[in-house]
Image 1 (tube, rainbow, N blue to C red):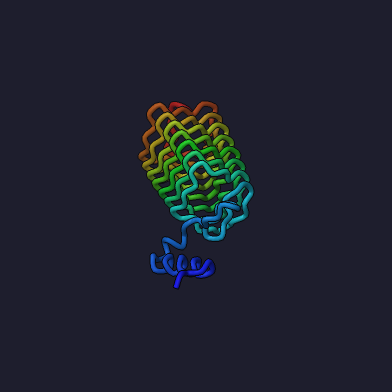
Image 2: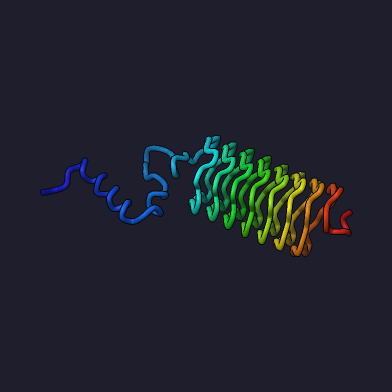
Length: 199
């Protein structure tokens, strides 16, 4: 007996269930609509606070203005993505890849960047207040006019990062690579271990 058209989706669902939870977390395959990951539509201005986007493939996606507060984006691939004016307050970006991402005017307050790769990212005018960078890479990132109030930078690669006119009030630096990083016109009041040459 040949499978009917209605039987095919059931067979696909059973195969996905047997493959385990990782298969169920994959994006919905619908050629007629937006990509949806764990119930979160991937499009500009999406509203997905607290979304589970672990390991998501978001390369080059447009998430401008998205509400991703408290989202889990650990190990997500956001290379070249557009996160301009998005809200990622409290988001977990551990191990995420944001190489060459655009995230201008974005809210990253209290976000976690543990082992995160932000090389060559455009992060101008974004707010990283009280965020944590630990083992992260901001090499050649553009950070003009960004806020880092109370932000912690520990064992991170800040080579050639452009901290131009940034607010580093009460920030904390420890064991970072700062070769060729620049901090012109930046506020460093109360900053611990900020580069003395730029005070």
